[in-house]
Amino acid sequence: MDAQELIDVLCKSDWRASKSNDTPSYVRQLISGWMDELISVRDEHDSHAANGSEKSIQNKSLLAVGKNHTVLAWRQHVGKYRHLHQQKNIISVGVPGMADSMMVVAVTITPEMVGRTVGVAVAAEFKAAKGRQSDAQKKWQRAFESRGGVYRLVRSPEEMTALVDDVQSGRAFEGAGHGRLQKVAC
Image (cartoon, rainbow, N blue to C red; front, top):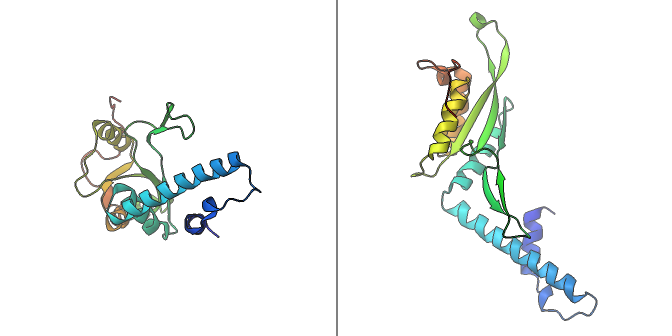
């Protein structure tokens, strides 16, 4: 049974309504709190998946490129979150402006380039249809690209797979100064 099946089973059950004396009240209260959290997370997930949110685009995009054995892609958690049990505590994760995901894309260099396969650092920043980069994200993009990485805004799984194709074909490296290390104010 996976996590989603467990959530569905627990959400459909009426165990909280039972008045069994077998379970101490503090345990029932703790489990009830967990259930409320699980239901909230499930409902939020269903809402995001239906509306084309950045999270939905990211999940579908990572699944789309994950089928390609020449790509290693992962989600990077970036932002500020409240501690689950101590709501006053704010936890910062990642570097402000850092891309939502990273990839290493295997690229076979042409014979003119020695015929060697290398990994290329690729950053995908997921945005909804009208989403825009923050100033911190633009700064991160400049720093990443100045060191030879490929960075792109992605708004659909098709754009994610096109990004991989562009890296592997060399199109992603076209343009003045791409990949030349530059001094960037971070």
